[in-house]
Image 1 (spheres, rainbow, N blue to C red):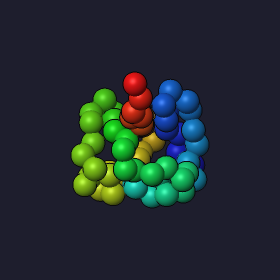
Image 2: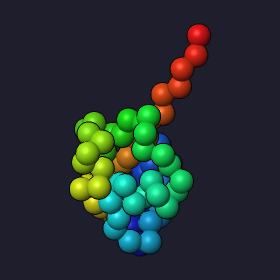
Image 3: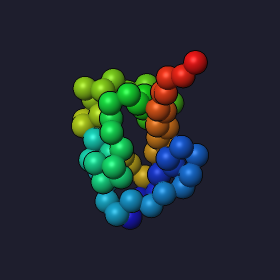
Image 4: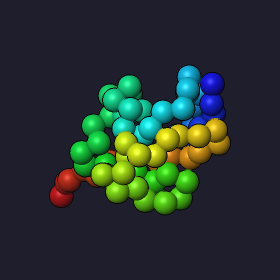
Length: 67
């Protein structure tokens, strides 16, 4: 198990996983979200390349329209 912080909440993951697989397992649609991994913005094309490690932080921001 590894410990990561997702949107300010501590979360235990069974194993190291990439961000894209984390999204799939948690029913998060990557379209329309911005991802920050360890204080750096991640381009959409790189979410499958970044493996979450012990102590990582992940912020997932979803933009919604309104007026």
